Length: 94
Image: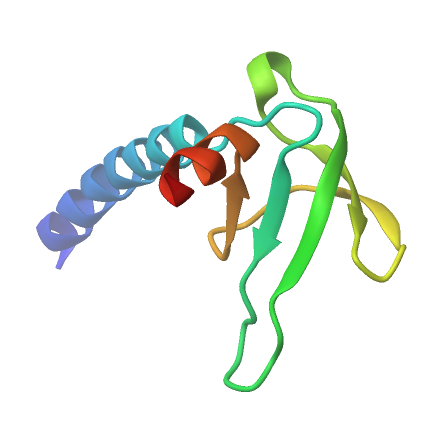
């Protein structure tokens, strides 16, 4: 059992570090982009908001977001959120 526990301890930090790097690489925004937060359970509506301020370095979270209902809050987006860039939306419609 002691040997098995040692291997589990060695794997866990490596996987966590790789996942963190991957998540940070995907989340970059600028003022004016839209934050799309998918519903967490079946039947829950998605939330959309406009990014008003970017507080992280190089476009990273947290973001000050104004949602469609007028609510403004500081958001640290999770894996259920994506950033929609206006330029990429225009390119898709062509």
